[in-house]
Image 1: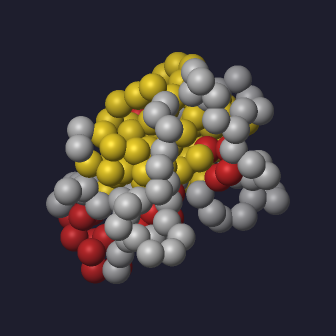
Image 2: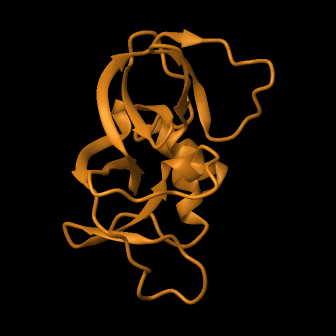
Length: 164
């Protein structure tokens, strides 16, 4: 996505993008394996039971696995892998967060959605490097808030993630 396209979406109010969460903003607290993370509620369409992903049928070469939701193939991001795990383990009770930022969509595979909490912004740790983190919040300890816009950018690199 070009800078001009992002600016058009921001002006249209389509996306807050990488804006830092504000005090009190609702965040979805999710667990993924040994990790916990926060996802801004404004980007969560719904929570679904996990479904076995498959390869996208019309791509040649590497692509994100996909799951069909309402007839639309959505790319799947595995929270454990995004958070640094060597591998993502798929469990029977896992859940999918359907994420949306404007027309872009993807599914975030997590172990469980625990609750919705209010944001309590914290300063970034001294060793923090920019990446998939929009900020930090104190929800039972400092946790990273996922930068949904950047996470969705990962799916666009493979030609998926646009709503049809």
